[in-house]
Image 1 (cartoon, rainbow, N blue to C red):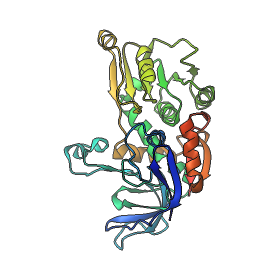
Image 2 (image 1 turned 120 degrees about the horizontal axis):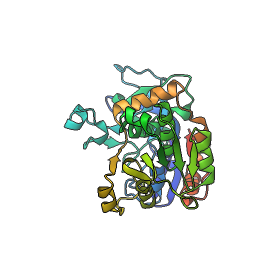
Image 3 (image 1 turned 60 degrees about the vertical axis):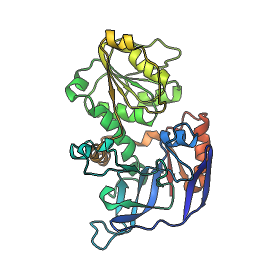
Image 4 (image 1 turned 45 degrees about the vertical axis):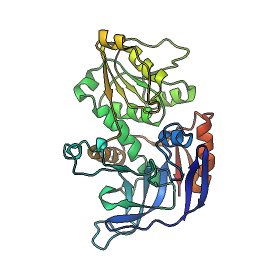
Length: 334
């Protein structure tokens, strides 16, 4: 089969690889669409250490069942998406519903675990989830990033979301824009979005932000009650703290830089709260799929490019250059 293989930092190859073989309890999935995540691009650039070449990336995926065990609840040709974190289900965290932090999990398309940027992939049947036939493939592969956004918003009690007089989202990339939509769906008011790029600020306005901020050329607010940081670099993290009023709360979602410096005295003396948000639980993933299937989230404006698998190396080179801010979410159609 054909696949896009990460062979070294800054190098992807569209090449022939052996077909995967499903083991007992697994499905063979014919890939139809794969979203390229910001973490994939960071891995391609060699910044994170969370992609170990040679390997096949791709954890935002949807496809059809090509082979299934005789006793499977899935049938050949059935449309599915995949919960890409294969948690153990037995540890104390999984038993408590915190499947996102399972220490024994294997993550599809991360580290050296081959993912969906290929014609086929095998997945445990346990982590395959049926998708309605009316959902376009390019939307079905967006359940995973929406689940990330949903989990982040769910970290805050809904009463606090709805009563906040001002909410700031730092970053208008895919996760930030999805956070914006989930906030609006949950009944939040006065959501402001900050981003360096004018094209992304305009998209945030089109998707329901009441205002946007250019953090370089405009004065930052300092009276924000609740903030969601969806970039993951030091400058954005500091901005998220500076914008908060006394006693404000920030949810950190971004995870690009491992170490950052913050003003600890400012956090302590203003009693700011920092809440971490990591991936999503199994229930978050299910809720995200329902939001898409119910039409509650508008994904179409975010999907700015669709390309074939053979274009994968070129797409990564373009995204890695950082020169095309208008590319919000790129989907590879297989």
